[in-house]
Length: 121
Image 1 (cartoon, rainbow, N blue to C red):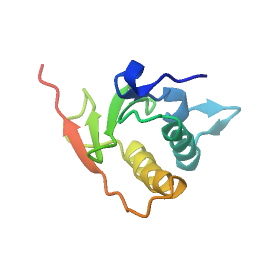
Image 2 (cartoon, rainbow, N blue to C red; image 1 turned 90 degrees about the horizontal axis):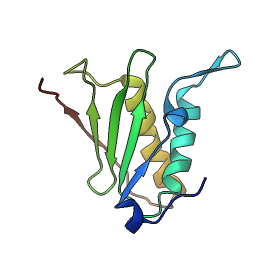
Image 3 (tube, one colour; image 1 turned 180 degrees about the horizontal axis):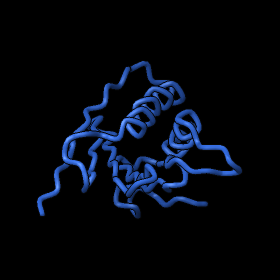
């Protein structure tokens, strides 16, 4: 799969839900380490795109994570829950930031700011 340029992509890159969402493949559930490696690989191909869109299905319904690499912020949208982050997605993204910093040769330690986006209906 080829990815476009940041100019063409308007600074946004999309992560396939298959990369991070729990799934059962041959009876084996995807674990946090597998999802973290997959997302880290995707970040390494982002080519300067600073907004990462991460749809995630924790087996009940879809939620959305939006990672802003410039501000070290992850926005979380769950239309069914107004107060809690999905802890598995949070663990995946937090560990990805450590792996990504290591792979990219950065010595800086990233502490993500998690923002729960509320839905007004």
